[in-house]
Length: 174
Image (tube, rainbow, N blue to C red; front, side, top):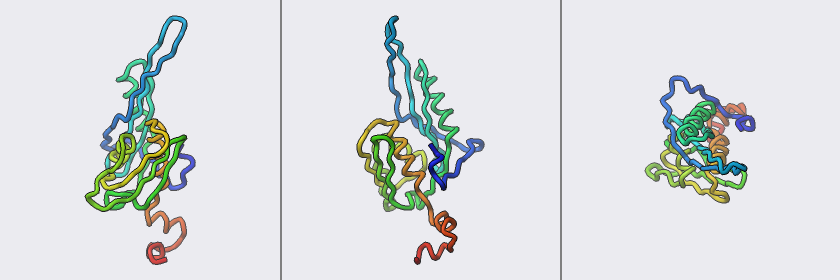
């Protein structure tokens, strides 16, 4: 999933205090001639609340095992997200499948105005002031991935200046 983004900085989980948030658990059923076989899939978001976040999916016959697998998967997919004054640097849209997520920077003290799956991701990143709108599919898997799509497209002023080969003053003053 991360191959499509140019400015993504991957992070190693060693030495980072990560907190995990359970976004959703689904019970899945496989019908066989012997009856029904139940399993569980869990989606989890982990982050240090300082700009590092990852998401993972785990599947198992037991809920606890599915969550543990999801946490391990999330730790393998950690990325750094640019944060500006406890918000995001600029408005951004993300999409994945049928899910669409719009993120807007907000003034200090606004709080995280977001629904369940989007809120879990933004709080794990460490964003405290943001407005968001989730549209289309409400499937938590796709909403989490759409939120990651929006966050991975974010760029701070230093990154823009470096990519354009100009000074930081020219980014702001044109």
